Length: 104
Picture (tube, one colour):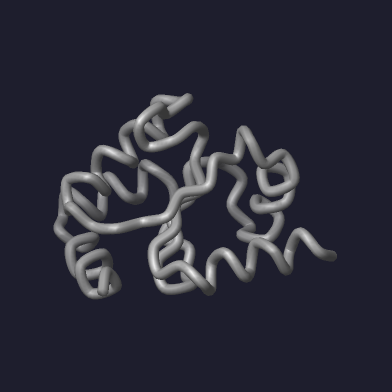
């Protein structure tokens, strides 16, 4: 299926990619907003995909990832999770090593 190939390519071509609702400057959901704030606190580069403007990705990424919700943060080809997981990892400093190590 072409959409799975597109998703796989996006994930493999971007060390840190966030699939979210809206954009970092204009998030369209509270969880996307909170996730962006966590990422911005690290002052790292990341790519984002607005799933509201990409209905095919919005529909099929949950199947590809086996993760039903957005946002989804992918680092170095691996799904890290959504906001709740990121927040917990942020609080206990696990996210520090993952994001800093993969932001070259």
